Amino acid sequence: MLWIQSKSKYYKNKYVVTLFIFSFYGMFLDDVDIFTIISQNIKLHKMNEEKELVEAKLTKTKNTLDKLQYLSELEAYARENKLFKKDDEDIFIITYK
Image 1 (cartoon, rainbow, N blue to C red):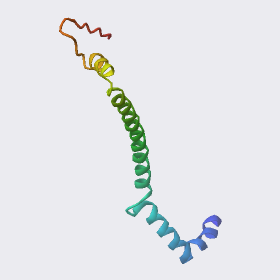
Image 2: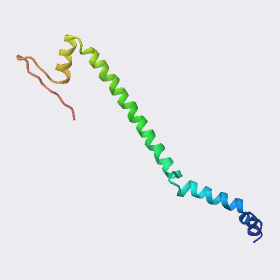
Image 3: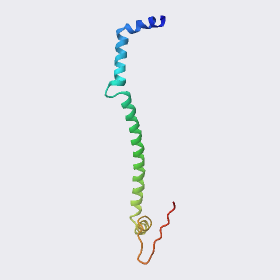
Image 4: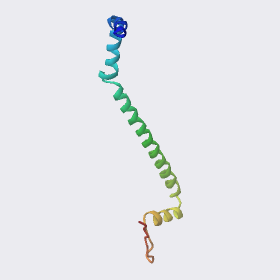
């Protein structure tokens, strides 16, 4: 009981009550509450990871395009990746499960 009486003087102070109300409103009830901030940070982290993946793919594609300027590289790319063949050739595709 003594503990409640010693703390009750803080609850009667209008500044402490006002600070508590505005803090509660700002953290939980406002449009930009703590839950929104956390979810936005998670989304931002995921988008940054996706951005890094896209940049890596872009770099790989640019390197491939630079190589394809030469006719020998173009033929090798078409045969390896697009399964093009010459008229007198047979292609065997081996897959592993």
